[in-house]
Amino acid sequence: IANRLNWNDLPSNPTQAEFYAFFFHPEFAPIGGRFQEALTFIVVAVLIAIVMRRARNTVHRQLEAEQDRAAISQIFGRYVPESVVSAMIADRGALAPVERRATVLFADLAGFTQMTEKAGARDTVAIINEFFDSATEIIGRHNGIVTQFQGDALMATFNLPVEDADHAAHAVHAAQDILTTVRETRFGGHDLSVRIGVATGDVMAGNVGGGGRQSYTVYGDAVNIAARLEEMNKEYGTAVLFAESTARMAAISDAQRMGDAVVMGVNAPVAVYSLAQ
Image (cartoon, one colour):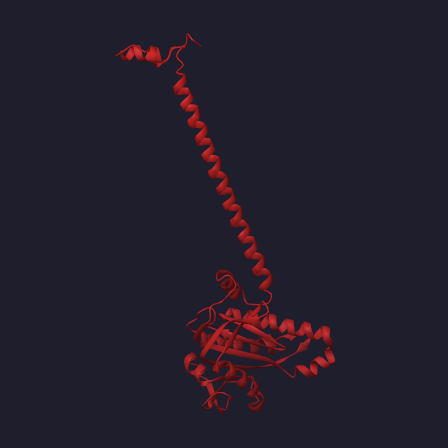
């Protein structure tokens, strides 16, 4: 090692030929320079390893988050609309309260109580589920969401929580499609009939509940009016009734004026319209 050449052995002011001859000499081995190079390589390798480990951990966390999101959507998507699930995940479980003009649709199966007495519990649940599956698909196709199932009835909203400028027209079209589907389809081997009420107005919506459980709920005159119009189909012998507010916003040319409805909690009578049969 003592015979090894180092930078100190390089002649002063060497010519280019002398420098190349010295640099490529088999005995030239600058220990200090080699040590610095080795140390640099080690430091760079350690830094790359740290960066790669952090990147791998980040990717793993992202994959786990996506898996959790998919699991939550799959589980809760059975009970609430997918759009609500997505909004809840984005808002970490809480939908901010909102007040907005929207359209509400109520749909209820007519004569269902008498039919269930003959069908039995198992067949009754199968019939309801088939109807709900079909109605929910139709409502979603028209940019609405089902916010509540109750017995053999459902409530859907349009323009909440997902905004839709044509919510009134979409709600009416959804009502028409639900009516057509029920008339043309046997559910669980049974023929069904449905009554539908639709109303447009200012409503409030948000998550409410207690004991750690919450539900996306909608309040307002439009909710009460839509529920009342659904019931009034019995009086008029119709299948679909909608409020004047919906008729105007949806610009339905073949709407038939049926009369006025008095709705509890609503100050003025509500003009009632029906779809042309």
